[in-house]
Length: 253
Ligand code: PGA
Image (cartoon, rainbow, N blue to C red; front, side, top):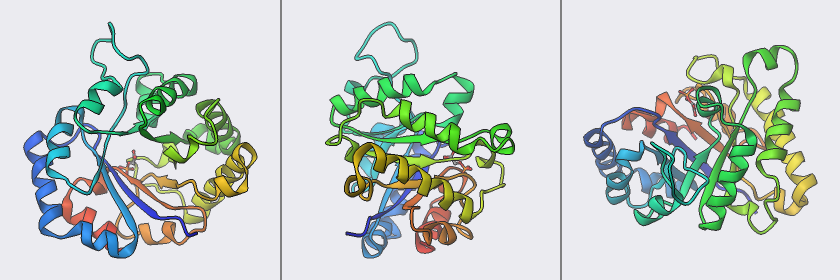
């Protein structure tokens, strides 16, 4: 069975609550969900923690994800948000291991693994991000880095649970830089990731897992990525902020 396509906007530290709600209203007025359904595309956004509740209320039909979560259930972790808190407002998706968290908050794949297990315990879906830095890319280490991130991040994730995980390959050097990786590079690495998943979970299970590309995806290049056999969608930052651009991304899939 063909895998669905997935377009996910990562808003990072952008949009006030009012702006986020306006985006949701635009999505409704522009019938984006109808367009998405007709194209077999799953649509989602990841707003700031502060906007999640309102976006969840105004964005019926959109997947609403947090940009992170803590691996503990509660406790003395200033500034953090737990799965239980997200669950309370109906959010059951979370991005994990985004490179900005790995870079600015020293988040390791071990920490990502703990978070993924907590999410799975709560029945959440996770979008687990992997990808190499520019230095690693230049040294030809892309696949070594991605392999370590996949193996450690998914450690002890069962075959039953892996269906709840989406993998996002985002080369760090392409995020927010305008230097997107070519569709060939994206396919090479996403195909490699699918091969790793086959080794871990078998061919049939791996063939059902969604793998996204992310990094400077724009309305004018999304089509090329989505043509690739192992690229099932895109995790988009900058170009997902305005509803018009989000619509163009969707239309060009
Ligand atoms: P970008 O961000 O589309 O702005 O490059 C992608 C991401 O960080 O997920």
